[in-house]
Image (cartoon, rainbow, N blue to C red; front, side, top):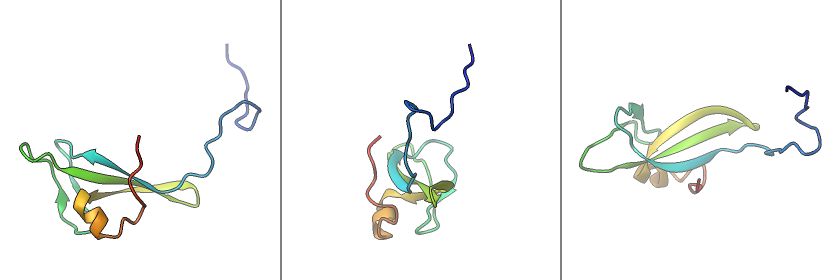
Length: 87
């Protein structure tokens, strides 16, 4: 059964305003992105389990883009989107 429920109806969850955030993730095989800080490729290496910062960037509460950083470069760049959040 399909019902017509509005997003602003009582009982419907709201998420508030989205803000930019950073999360730390392992670099995955086949990754082909550039670090926003140093411009070098964030690349997977079999023996060296590198980590990366993935940042969802929002402008005025609307998603705009994703930026990638080497984990070390994120801190060197002043942590532009704050400390990484836990998922």
